[in-house]
Image (tube, rainbow, N blue to C red; front, top):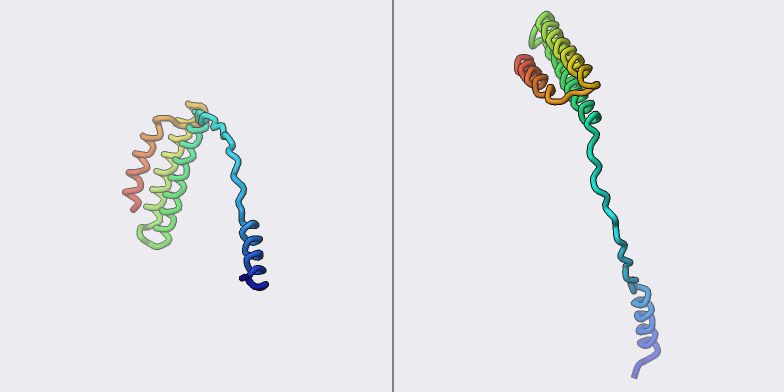
Length: 120
């Protein structure tokens, strides 16, 4: 025989379990759009931005090396001049191609790689 406390406890457990019932989730069909083709002009502009970013980073590195006396200021000026020449080449190439770079980026990266080895 159940006592009043035991029946009350069972009723309380039943209410608690009823509150935990999870409603089934609705299935929604998600329509996935085909990925948009990247804009070739935007890619070309991104490439010139990458080259300019490398030039700026190397410029800053030269400044740090000169300030830490790793090499004298005239040598730092020579590196800055070479970086300026590469920047001018990049701008000239980009102006011929609507403001961005295509395969020319490989040539510029080769020049920057050589400069980077010389700077370090």
